[in-house]
Amino acid sequence: MIIKQATFLTSVVDEKNLLQDDLPEFAFVGRSNVGKSSIINNLTGKKGLAKTSSTPGHTKMINYFEINQTFRFVDLPGYGFHRAGKKNQNLWSKLIQTYLLNSKSLKTVFMLVDSRITPTDLDQIMCKFLIQTGRNFIIIATKADKLSKSKQNLAKKHIAAALGVREDIIIFHSSLNSQGKQQILDYIENLV
Ligand SMILES: Nc1nc2c(ncn2[C@@H]2O[C@H](COP(=O)(O)OP(=O)(O)O)[C@@H](O)[C@H]2O)c(=O)[nH]1
Ligand SMILES: [Mg+2]
Image (cartoon, rainbow, N blue to C red):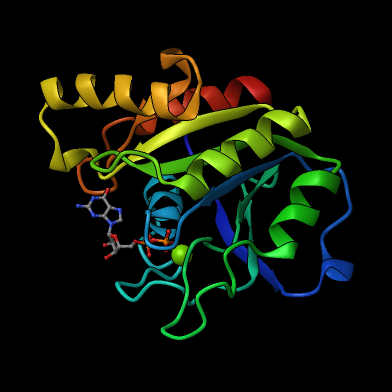
């Protein structure tokens, strides 16, 4: 599949405003700074489409993007970020939960984990939550350009073991060298 059109639609902070029509959606979820905005820019080929940041924790809203007039990418708020002194704040946004439980047109959740780091407790909780919801999901191991192919093979085993998932649902991706991009686009094409 080739992405010919990708436009920012809207940002939502209140669950009342979640989009409700039946355009298929693909959501990106993961810790702050794992690379959610970057992968959206890489897949669409539009560098500034989703705002990227080297300072974690800024996205508290859901950003919707329309793709090829046929489906949407949904950039969910990052989890796991807490400011100094507010340790338990914002570990898990209610908005993420509401979206994942209620969205009618959600086809697949792309759960992003950093390929260099063993999944964190919160990653494990998120993955369990996804399994409980019965949602279709794929694990994307991000920033794959930082690992050699042999290190990626090793990391795949660690990620699968830590999350309790099969290795064949893990795709390595790099927003720098586009590793994994075609595989993800082909996957999406099969579902829309
Ligand atoms: N080397 C490398 N860095 C990346 C990659 N994807 C994202 N980053 C960097 O990681 C940081 C966070 O990325 P961002 O997309 O804003 O993460 P988000 O908070 O999950 O949306 C930025 O400094 C990006 O440049 C990647 O594939 N490779
Ligand atoms: Mg972001």
